[in-house]
Image (cartoon, rainbow, N blue to C red; front, side):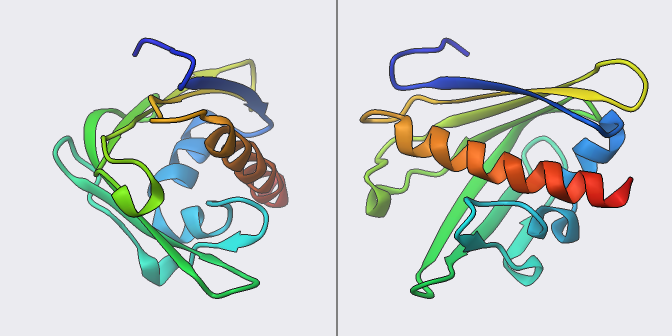
Length: 150
C-alpha cells in the first residue's frame, strides 16, 4: 500500500506473543475488549469475523455518551495467519468516506513474548488525523487487554 498524505502508518510493540495479538484482532470476544477509541465500546454480539480471504470482518462501535452506533464492514483481501491481515472497507458515505480504505496489519515477532505491529490505513478522502487518533486510542486499550492476560 502506498502511504499518502491521507494515509498513515502506526507501529507499536506489544508485550505479547504474535499469536495472541493476532487472536485479539480476529476473535469477537477478543476484539470486543479493545476495538474502538477510548470513549467507544464494541460489543462481541456486534462483531462478525469470517476469517478467510473473501470473508467479512464486520463490527459496530457504540459511543458511550450518546449510544450512537458506528458500523464498519470490511472484506478480508489478504490473510496469512498469524502475521498478516488486510481489510478493504465498504464505502461509508454516511461518515464522509465514499470510497473504500485499506487497513493492513502486519505482525512481527520482536523477541521472546513481544510483537511489533504495523498498521497502515487509508486513503481517506480528507485528512486522516481522526482515524489515526482513533486507532492510537484503541491500541492503548489493546495494550491493556494483552497485559491483563500476562
